Length: 189
Image (tube, rainbow, N blue to C red; front, side, top):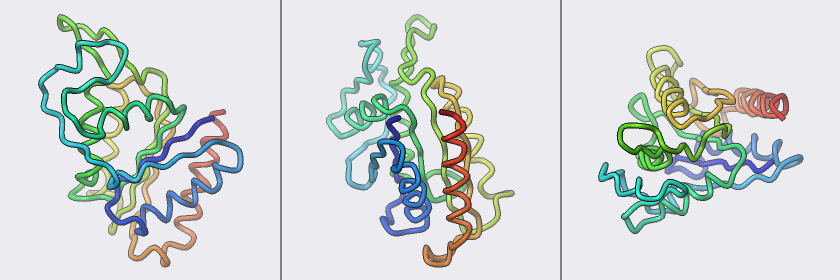
């Protein structure tokens, strides 16, 4: 199985990267794992111009950035893990821009859904946050569920690591979360 992880954190060695790396090590023993560090790419926000609807079989976008190439890598994967620190109850700005560009993966014509390029793909959410889940990381989970439903994706899980301070202090929280993600992946396959 081909697994694509997307690190949406601007901190390459932060809490989110630490938990994601643990999962990647577990998954790499049995699957192909590739990571996108979103900060290595230029992804502008969606313009809402609908020029992406011209071709029903590929992402398409009139913007000349890395967005389409990243979406093609997402489409080539069997499982996509979106990983982000919690910023203002949502994704990091860097990951949010890419998620907004997922708009072009569902094609509309004359008010009807004509194609859903991610239909049936499996996706998961990994979030690290500095406080509790309640009244903090609850809305990002709703956002994720709604976007994955819109895209036609199957949600593997939503994994939240609360009360994060420093990566070296994550200890068992990181290990448990990575193991839970891997166990859910194994149960799926």
